[in-house]
Length: 449
Image 1 (cartoon, one colour):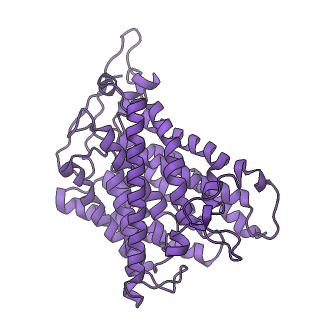
Image 2 (cartoon, rainbow, N blue to C red; image 1 turned 180 degrees about the horizontal axis):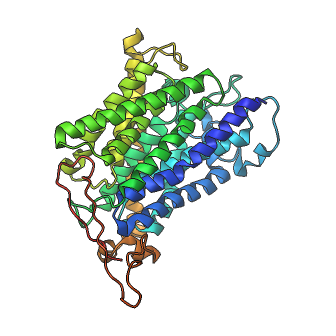
Image 3 (cartoon, one colour; image 1 turned 30 degrees about the vertical axis):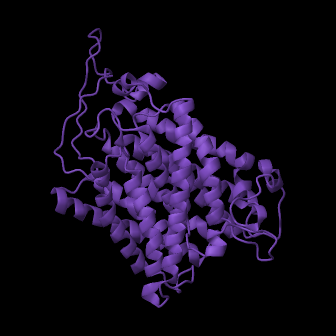
């Protein structure tokens, strides 16, 4: 047992676990004050559902021996309940239980990412049911394709993308970000637009959003670096590339905002950082530090433009899951085919390093396959749930605010400053930052307790 690497993956797992409240703050701050608790509940609820299913059969479906040796799905009964992981196995460098916990967090974060697309209007019960079915029918098969590698002795057959196709995805550009992004698009197409479209409520708490982005940035070092599954040079290169790409993307997003809208915003800075983190996730082990800067620059420049597409095509992706995670994931996945260097930990060369077009084609097939599968299955799942139990809250509940209507809670006690005996006084909440991808002027939104 490699105790140093075990300690590193333990630390990485704790960093990734901090991404859960980070995502809740990031998403919660971007919603209206009247639905921020619901957004946070959707994040934590998705994590809880995923965690239970992961222990019961999720880990087995991803890392079990592939049914029929075709690389589509792992044997769900092989590690049922994970009781087999309790016994120490001295021939392994890492405790299997630790790997299972680390990968459980990947699954949980992926499901939670989808929630941002449907903010302000989806039933909480319907979301929880959707989360359970989605992780079972979409995430687990795709994760098997991407993360399950064949055993060296041939005793275990893994996923087709990782082994037969040979695509590079170091930490989840396809299985996590493209998967969540395209699922978000399918779900919003079925769910429909918010009643306030095309001028929905502004982000109500940008400091919370920036804090959430910072926590996510911290956790991402564990997300990407821990995917090396060892404390060594590969993890160190990945750590450096993750930092560089994020910085470059943040700057690129601000430049685009300044040139397009005349303002560089805090929301843009937070969004740019996330776009860089998304794009470098699949490529962090394949590119050089300069290559990582290029990945970040492209993502930071393209994603803010992609966010604006929702207004052109009319889909209400509330918190820009499509524009940031789908587009950023595709960018990072495809740029491997151009910028990969065989000097990096993955040891493969892309077009710009003499590798030809082969790797670019492989990366495109991997991205396309995940998009097609996830979109179709998510669309069918959403249509079934809409017919069986309904997906949306009532219009009255949406206008009132999902927090009070669904959870009987309010994020802020807006009457706390009232004089004793003076009754409840409404307090305005001013939000002066533009929505991502929007050039509209600031507005002041009044939210009543």
